[in-house]
Length: 120
Image (cartoon, rainbow, N blue to C red; front, side, top):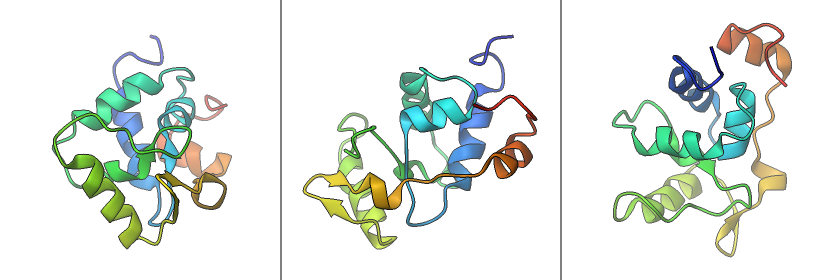
């Protein structure tokens, strides 16, 4: 089965739920950590499909730290407000990725995804 097969969205949602307050990840970061490097767009589709506030979708951004301006009306403004409430700092319209990027360690990821050796 390919990395984008059954279970891809479940891995994406598990990873995004693990991003702590005050930290962010890019769509590409999440795709790579889920074992599907290059699938950033599919991570975006997974975030757009969410109807569950348990998954902190607002912590996933473009690689540049910019908020994606698609999706539901008002969602980008809400995303910025939620991030700022968590202490995430912006430089203009972009998050300071050097300061706020989530960098989980391999052991935590393996436990989270139950995929020993399958992560980059």
